[in-house]
Amino acid sequence: MKPLQAAAAQGRNNATAGVYGARLRFWFPIFLFALVLVAYFWRRGEDWRWPELAWAVAALLQAAIRWPHVQANRANQVRIQRVDRLEQWLMFAVFMGLLCLPLLHLATPWFDALDYRLPDGAPWVGAVMMLVSLGYFHRAHVDLGRNWSPSLEVHTEHRLVTQGVYARVRHPMYASIWLFALAQPLLVHNWLTGAFGVLAFGLLYALRVPREEALMLDTFGDEYRAYMQRTGRLWPVPQR
Ligand code: SAH
Image 1 (cartoon, helix red, strand yellow):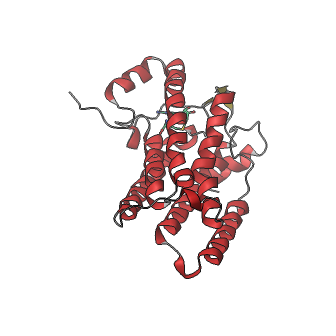
Image 2: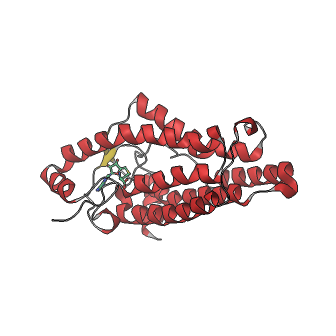
């Protein structure tokens, strides 16, 4: 068995980690996406638009990249968890803004009154941003490994990761989600189902990052303090 699968199997017998998405089954997102695509072609017919489909493919790939880590995360024994109501509400807003609302927009005409128009080049910029986002999202998951969690957690075997994409940036996964959120309104041209996700993720990011860094400082102390000195949050700092 591969390490991630073994961890997932072990997790079924343990107190499990992860408060978001931990009980999701594999077939459900596949079924949902298939349903949305059928509804999309039903309603748009000949008038289908590649940027909206590109968004759907990117969202599906993002879920596929994360899937094995959600599974593996079940095996983690949580030592500290810092999740409050506000964070849960903001996670819900992000889930709506970056996944549910765009899916509903593809499947139904409910939000069409809030559509906007962009120049023809805009979706191409969005598509390139999506590609970069997915590559970075994948790398961050590989480098963070079992230390990843969807909520703020420290596990019993938690280790500070400072290599790979974490070598010069502290939040590469959030950087990749920023790219996804900013690319989305270039592909899904709607104020609510395209652009709202940027606001939702911006709020979650603003709340979470100081809390996450405080948690890391409480857990790793001087090691994390030194790491903060040589890294930037989303962008590398110039090295002296
Ligand atoms: N903020 C990071 C990680 C997001 S996942 C990024 O954007 O890439 C969130 C979890 O990762 C948190 O619960 C925290 O425990 C853990 N974490 C964050 N930075 C870490 C690091 N450098 N090493 C190990 N775990 C880390």
